[in-house]
Image (cartoon, rainbow, N blue to C red):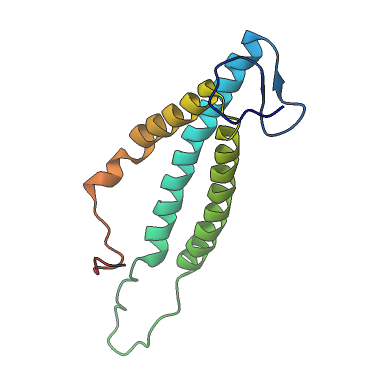
Length: 140
C-alpha cells in the first residue's frame, strides 16, 4: 500500500521493488544514499554551469589583422556537448529525487532536502559571488 500522507517509519520501498528497507540499518543506509545522491545533484549542476559558461565565452580576437573569423575552437564545441550531456544527466537525477520524495517518508524527505542544502553550500555557494544575467529583461 502506498502512503498518501507524510509518515515516519523505517519501512520504505524506494524507486524499485527490491530496494526495500526492513531494518533500521537498511533505512539509515538508504537515508545516507539519498543524502549523497542529492549532494551529487548539486555537484553535477555546478559542473554543468561551468561547462555552460565555458561554451558561451567569447573567443579571443585574432592576433593578425588580416585573418578571417576563426572557426569555433574545439573546446567550445566539446563544452557545448558536455553541457547538453550534463543537463540530461542532471534532469534524470532530479526526477529520481522527486520520485524518492514521493514515497512520502519523512526521513527520505529530510535526507534529500538536507543533501541538496549541503551540496549547494559545498559546491555552489561561490555562484552567489558572480552574477550571470542571461536576459536583462525582468519579465523573462
